[in-house]
Image 1 (cartoon, rainbow, N blue to C red):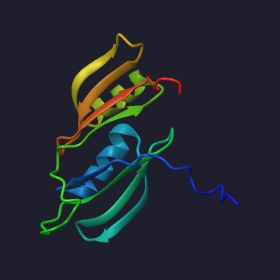
Image 2 (cartoon, helix red, strand yellow):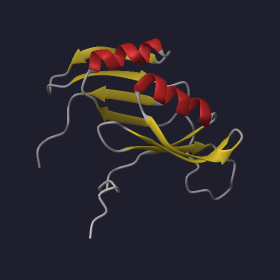
Image 3 (cartoon, rainbow, N blue to C red):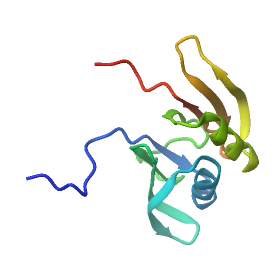
Image 4 (tube, rainbow, N blue to C red):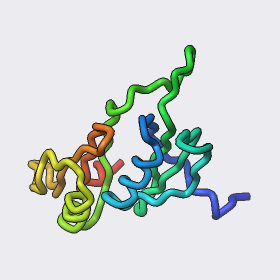
Length: 135
């Protein structure tokens, strides 16, 4: 039996942030991620899930100074490619929200229309229309 409310298995990249609450707000405003779970107290986020409207999403949390923490990822070292439909509108939204645009919208030699930006934590986000090669 399959529960139709649970999405199929996907890749969920993870990252840490020095100010996770601010990063969640930014990723929602600038890029359109949708927060679906935010667990934490005060400024500390233990676990957050942000869905991407076309499927999948990311998970993030506050940076921790805990010896032996296997998820002790340095903030600002994350990078992701995200499939998007309307690159020009998303670029305008990201720029208006203060994203650092590091590559303006352009066509690639493999047929993707894309652009790249950095969030306030320094993470690299590339958005494009390329959906991958057929299986």
